[in-house]
Length: 278
Image (cartoon, rainbow, N blue to C red; front, side):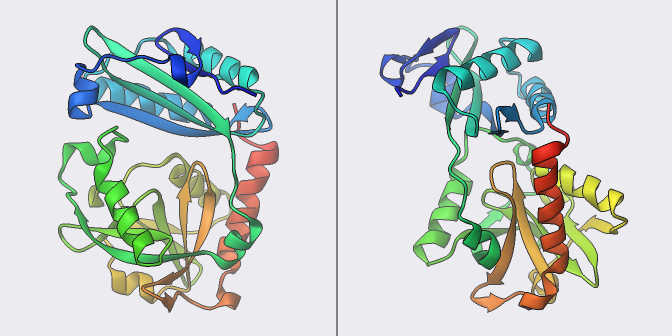
């Protein structure tokens, strides 16, 4: 089936798409985006993604071209046109020459094989540092080169992901996900003041922790803390919860210690099948 996208009010093939070469969004990376997943035709945490988009657009002085109800209608129609039940959806807004440009794409969702969730990711410590005091650290902007370079560096060195520290040497996040680790059956994750994105799935983990009486602490944590943990995992809206097997080729915990991560994966997958989707 021919791929269709939505660009500035029209459903088009990618080859038909045209944007201005002079807009601030293209010239200065003045834009933002949301990455979403549809599961069995339902958008996972749809309202949460659109609320974050609305909040960030206001703070970045980007005028939202449609209200949330219309955005939902556009995205659902695009999924139907492309015939996807399970899809990776990207909604992008950026400053155009005369207003706000909008692009929505929907591609077939390609999950990681089950063996990846069993074996987990291998991560390295990035040489790039997050500026925790930067105003932009809280946004998913289209000026995404910092994270892409961090990921490329990790992949070139034989790793799956890059752990990014902030200027004070504390863990901020990874190049495309939030980080959690577990010690003595308690959860730990960098606070937002460390320069990490307030991820949608990050909030889901907080909700699950409350529901199952798991203590969770957000604060300043070092690589030493991570290495001494019993287990660790990464989260984002596309892959859900991915175990973190090793850091700089040194295992984190043991296979037998991964019980809490497995429980959270199980409960998260239950939410996908039966729970809080809108």
